[in-house]
Length: 558
Picture 1: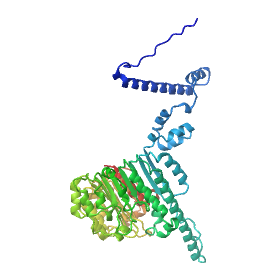
Picture 2: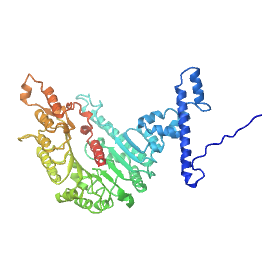
Picture 3: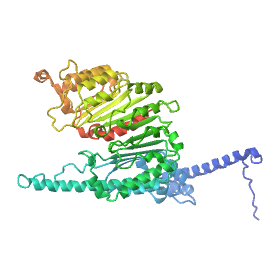
């Protein structure tokens, strides 16, 4: 005779009371998690079991009636484990099985996506796959297009021709370069379209940042319309890109950060009008950097800026930042501006006027409105007389970056900066990409004191100093290191920029190079050496990208 005894199950606490409904649900969730953890613990015990009877018995007990292996883990647990892994490790782990691959692109794992792409046809299928998976839900998207240097010489047909085929070799090489230009430009447009199409209906997007490294396509100035017309004869792709960008702005519901820098033909003067008033009123960062805008047209006007009452950081072309904009930002209904990044480009200065720029009274009003306002300026090939007009005494200048190919910065400009901005300046970058390295300009000519030494002495908050293409005397470099000491976190000076006095070279008992390294390291309180390979520092080789990334971090550090 068989007796079946019914064992009563434990009743959840508070099950009979109406007030205990929440406790019942919480109790059931706890039991579910406990069962999952016991299941995982049994699986791990089984996998750790030693060979032999005992190990096999423990493994059979742990995995009784269940499929062994990674596929038996619940999806929620896999997603939770993936959340502790960096993005590259997640991608590697997803190759384990199809189940893990399905869990890889769970929205909670990809709240932000930062992509740096080479403008190469090989990148397109990878980008399409990634954007198809993540583009519809990602909250923060930052994309950088890094154009490969197709224009750099690499053993072309005209390299070793001698006197016979000089002209013919140059024509062949020019034709090859023209073909590469078209290839890069065509690929660039396709990649931009791929990104914009994938996020056109994403209403969760909060941060959207685009950077296009098109400097390789415009080494001789603005990109010629001839090449653009060959790639896009009817202008359909360019128009499609502009329409998609405006559609993304109009569909956005949570956008707080919009940044677009050096992108070819994507932002127009009417693009921001696609933003609703609700989104414009809550926007916290706006960056529109494009020195190829023709004529007197601007990407944003003072009237349009009145809608952006919550801006805490702003980045614009300097010629677009007018006195009327400064007045708008000082209105009582606007949030105090914290960060302002300005790009001064010779192309903009040639086509636009500096007459409408803010005067010193406007800068004083901005500083009174926000005592924590800091300004970051980057100047490309700007003449000294124009810099004297731009550098108003009341600008709270924290960072300045000079980059020139034709026009050199004068010692008077450096001296002016050290006197006017001694309370704010933390970053000073001086770059001169000259072809003839035998004759770097000397800022200390006809001066009692070197302007760079005075800069280090007056600017007590200086933490970064980078120099290339200007003569820096060894004894002045030692003086800079001693003046600033450990507060100078980064001192980057290229080897070819350093020069020695004749007296130091004549002393046979002391190696001048070794003595320089020793004295500078001692002054900084950390090991130091000159930059031997300029290609290793993006601040010298990729000024556009360096400025854009610094501007991003500068704006985020509020």
